[in-house]
Image (cartoon, rainbow, N blue to C red):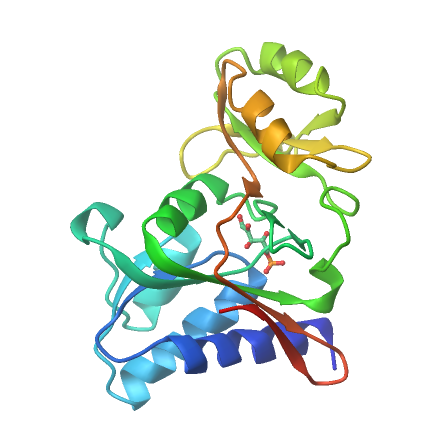
Length: 228
Ligand code: 5RP
C-alpha cells in the first residue's frame, strides 16, 4: 500500500466511524485530512447527511466548499461534535506534534472547541518520543521575528524560518513559522510552558492531552486504534 493509500484508508475509517448525521464537524488540514474531507463530501452528496463544518485552514475550507459542504465560522457554533485531523508525530501517550502543514493555530482553536478530536495518521508518524523525527513548528509574529528566534533557540533547538520559495512562508493568520528541531522532547509540558511565554510567539505545535482517539494506518492493511 502506498503512503497515500494508508492516509486515505485511515481517513475514511475515521469519517465512517465518528461522523453522524446532524453533527457539527471540524475539518483538519493536510494530505490525510484531505481524504477525510472528500469522504465527508460523499456523506453529504450521496448519503444525504446534514452536516455543519468548521475548517482549520483556508485550504480545507476551499476544498470543502468545492464539494458542496456547508462551512461556517468557528464563532458561529456553540461546540463541535468531532474534529478529524492529521498529525506529524504521535507518541504512545497520544501526545502530538502538529503544524507541518502550517495550520497549527486554527487547528488548536478548533480542537479546543471540539467534544472529541480524532487524529488520523499513517504508521510513519508513530514515535516513541516526540521531536525525534520532525521539527516542532512555532508560529510567531512577523514583528521582531529574529529576536524571537534567539529566544526559541535558547530552549535547546535549531530554529529554521519556514520558507515558501525565496520568501518566508506566511500562515493564514499572517504570521511566520519557525521549525524548531530538538534532539528529542523529553518533557513536552515543560517545553510548551517555556515556549508560550516567549514574546512574539503565538502558539506551538505541541498538542498535549488533545486527542481523544488516534487511528494509525499500518502497511499490512490494519488500522490500530488508541483512545476512545
Ligand atoms: C497541518 C497539520 C497536519 O495535520 C499535519 O502536518 C499532518 O499533515 P499530513 O496529513 O499532510 O501528513 O498539522 O498544520
